[in-house]
Image: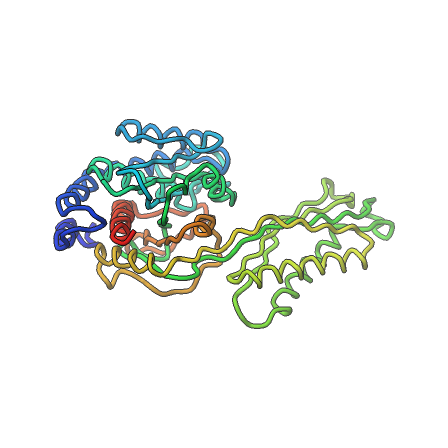
Length: 413
């Protein structure tokens, strides 16, 4: 790939340091050589995972495939809870630095006409988790072949999209003896050849909710005899959308979206029940809690005024990702070693998206980096869309970024 520093520059750079993370110059050259050899396999890993995506809580074939690749390399591993996910330990015993990738897919019908497009109807790797797992596989295999001595843990995590995969892996011991954790996420807004490593808040907290509006159904021709949950729901949504921005002082961004509505089965029958589902996203925990209280108040007021029963159920709130300052600085230096200072963004606004990598960061410090994957000269194909795709030239650079960041962090760990 001509858009990033080439292999010669990378090897020259690592040779300029006598030791990184306790690893010798010979080791650094050896691991880079292994990464070069693995580059075609990273594409193979990604395409195999992309063609057979599995939803959260169903990642059995994905887990088996990752385990097969590790077993073929003689790398010891253990399977996560419920036979989903994989945990790998490399290097000497002791306090470890962890590398994490997610591996689940989304309920989206792929529209890309690719030879490796999803073969599973209605399921697609539209968030890059196939690439994340492929890049971590490459990093783990290269480190193993180079006989890394630094204690390392690899975490292939299921159920990120469901929001509870990290907690399940933590409960299974994924962070035992771990002192810090690193991850990366593909970013189609950045071209291949760029990365972003930013300290501080990176994603919003996320809290999903459900609202049940129970009225009294009847014939569509006689709504005056009914308590129409559809009409009530429409007014409820309008009130929520108006109240959230107007009830909060200007400050950290808060977004509430109603994303699911279901009511009725016939065009001439007013139903008894309407079900709504939505999400609260906020960069500040206090603002998120305040938004939930506003929704609860509106539900109670609508129930009092309409005669319907309106029930609100709030799910667990996933915290926002907050990158540790010192860890981020080391990761930024590692990225600059690979793509040059001009290729690394170290400032920028946090995303209103959510990421359960935040659950690991409640236990140990760490950093989630962003890796540019946009095709050269092309328009952005956003995450979570049926046409999302990524430049596979970026895969080897993702593996390098994980390895290089790991070794930088190993200097002080």
